[in-house]
Length: 413
Image: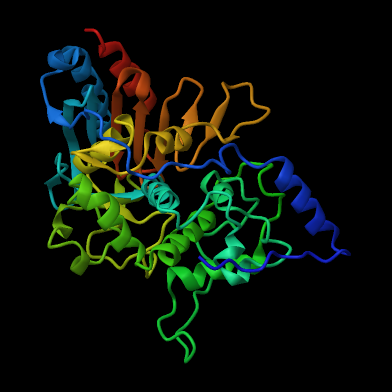
């Protein structure tokens, strides 16, 4: 790959010098790691299967108590519906749907319901970046400006790919993209696109020295999606499908809500409920068939998936990057992505929490992510445990913390 010339910041620019020094001293862990290619021998790997709770060493009665929490939440109007999935040692011991995917039409939530995953898109996108690193097309310590020319300035010139992955880039842009979107022109007849919109972030740049602070940032991940397209030569959705979803058998995973992209599956999607009306009833904020909220495939969110698909993605991580006889990423990459890079709650009296590359990471080794439309995924390698709680009532009262406690209590039962 031909690299752009190294950026030479002006000697009179104090902010540029400060950013450079801080970025050098505080680069997130693992930025310079050399990751082996995906050619290591395949270990014996677990594939997801169905089993009775007892076969996974778990109590069926206790797990049903967890389901009862969600039935009660639906009955009380705290949530409209949910899909719950628990997998232990690769065995799905609980997979139940409660409530409604479209209450007004009387359509129940089903185990196969398709969800807008929102920020649970980030772990697959981070994995796509990792595959390109393993293939030698990107590096974690690449400066973004080496791939996107508009980032070659004193405000953005020290941001690395690893900074974007760990939300430590210093970017503070509060929206998904700058508004309004670019309009088609003679120079850019296909505008707006992910790459064109990500290029607009460069002149805005970072407000804090890269690598020094955590700030959850959607534009950073949208820039990662543009980098995937640039490095792979493929549209983001196509690359994700080729490198992740098809090899993993994730045949219900997509990246845009357009009916023509969903292979006739639009009717399996849930309504997303954002607000209540004057009577306290939840009203639709987005319904299947509505226009997408972003007119192109993005990387900060936009994934559509099912619990059946997402549990396979999580199991691949538990397997050390292997699933179904195929290596997706190396074991070393799994460890790199799921290890702490920067603390997310500095100064808090709560237990330390961290972000890795595409995953939130706890001190006990559990890694997880959530999505603003109501989905949550938790992976505990110490117990080979995956817990998925998918709703589309993001502002409801979700008993997910209590549900996880019940799941824990069910182990060994």
